[in-house]
Image (cartoon, rainbow, N blue to C red):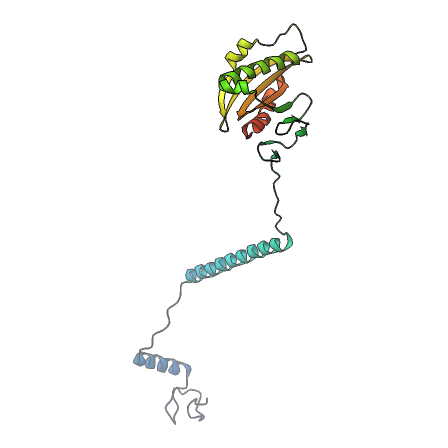
Length: 254
């Protein structure tokens, strides 16, 4: 045996070096280590529980998974923005706008409807709005007689009643189906205010070309002019056509 301290050769059976006294045999060295440890009060490290390491590893993996998911989401968002540019779609308005050259009369009408302007005297209207031959709105105006203006509302109302009666009488196609008489028209005519103007409305139903047809009249008074709006549509299509009629009537400004 060789002494680890002084390097001298010692017999195999000795436990301590005969030169320097250091322990040589394994059991002597272990005993010497324990004695020195007790003298120096060495604290051995505590053993960690394996479960603690497992939970720590799982937490780290969870954090890494969240970071990877966020990175993947960010990649897809930025890629979509690069590959698909945003397109701004301009919505088409639902109505067309009509206005006379001087702006005295204006209203809106549905996009699919056709507007036809007919020749009239200066300052007067004669317009035909139509979706089909049976679904129409006719807008006309005429100057009131000065004698009518003296009585104003009462005289103008009677004049509007007479216009409705004559229009229905000329429109009917079955002689045996007479239009309402003037008294009935006068009683059923409704006074109202249309966009700040005095107006009257009346609804009737006739046989027109063998088809039961509804008529809606509006008369609007503006200074010395009387505007007439006549809406007509087959009775079975009336509810469908009414919203289009209301667009025109509701936006009519004079």
